[in-house]
Length: 162
Image (cartoon, rainbow, N blue to C red; front, side, top):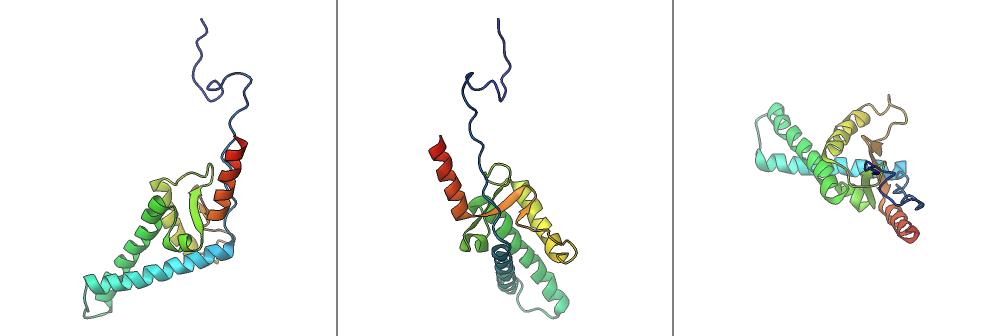
């Protein structure tokens, strides 16, 4: 009796070539990433300001204003970067500028903890950008920001190979 354990090499018949690996497009350019990051920051600030004024109307001082403004900006940023990436594969600015966030190993949808870690990592990198020369939020925490056009092109080529 030949009992074989299932595994990656035993799942296909002998003599058949392995299935092609998913090709992940190259990372989007730094200028495009910087423009998207700036736009996302402006969206978070403007919507956060409007939300803080709506939820917490005019207050007495700066401390009360910052106590309402900062959490609203962080909530808008979280919703944009984490929830937007999970649902739409990118933040508002990334979608406007034709980019998507994918897993850099296989090009599939990001996982929730990857998007949360990437969001937190973005604050560190942007805050310490001058000290971390060459670091980019474009590819962090196992995720990569790619141009939507490049991803469609790679998927089309993969289908032709199969």
